[in-house]
Length: 508
Picture (cartoon, helix red, strand yellow):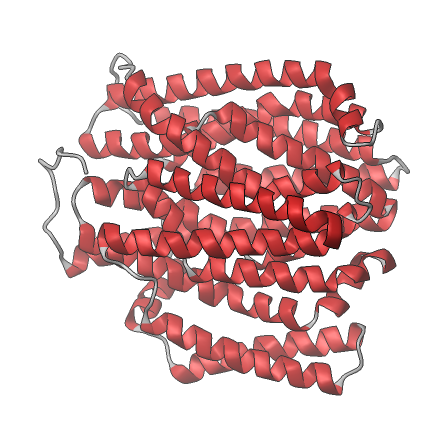
């Protein structure tokens, strides 16, 4: 913990803690709205591709997108978390020179790294496509190389803006503009009868225009900083960011490595697996926006020794993640066979995979933003070891299970790795700040989820599988879940958060 506590807050005051929770709620509420829009757009992109092109082309698109995600993290070199943390810390210290130096250094190195990696990929694309047993991936990989610098600069700029504890640029650009633009362009090229290459051009155009908007938003925030010569502290930033880079790369690898390994084993069901993972991602969509709102507050509070407020914000964030995602998990666990045919008849075989993936992500949600707490409190090395361990476990399980069990084996490997790493993090958060992700509100949410699960099983038993079962089932889950939540009553903190969201106003 930093020794810079000259302006530290009192150890614990109710009003101060309330302000932090309300501030995070406003940022998290905006992020949730953006996540709904962003995940909905990405879901529709996958739905359009599946219906227009079939499982094989969806698999190619997924492999290209997985490569973009992995190389994006490789190019960022950990500066995403470093930019957010050190901008927040320098703001807490009143250090405009440090803010300017951090932002300039992070953007310059990330952008240069992305250009270099993109150039190498453009040259190596034919060899990489042959290694994945599909020469037709060559053009797609070259488009990934073209989109990479823009995607990296956009991520870095938006990460820096979050250091001001504002979520507007991240939400409006990263979660609304970029995915919606990609959706509109994808729909246009598919309507024109074009294929997966044109759909990847939509990714390129959306990435470059989003990068320009992100840089504009960061420039506006930088104008609020007092004039001062930039102070470059590469040792501080690199020390944190190098470890964070390894951690983020391992974490992103855990998400995407199974898709690439399925391609390496020439598995024909990559498209089915991608659709199943997209469904599960929709269920967990609340985790990313709440993490984004949660991180800067933890960096700020921990830097000022406000541990009681750190514990309170962590518990609140975990409760919101679980309660907001439980209805979607109930739907995934009970109605996968009715959900998957929405993408086309060839995707119904992914029902078992969907259930297995949902179990792993449910544990991920229930443990809350523990990885973000480790990062923002400066325990980035510990978080890196967690992520690397999970990635090694995932790769080992994939190599063992994919040859015999295909996409079901990949799903088991992914879920097992998620469960293991999140249980380890819960223990580490307890050791660090003596916090566990258990509150009365969380218990009420689990009770409501259990009631919704029982009602959904009754619907599945009474209504034949198909569109009618899905419509009745989703309606029943929503009604029962909300009814039980209201019957059990809202906590004082829930009421405070809802009021803050209802009268949301601009606040840094």
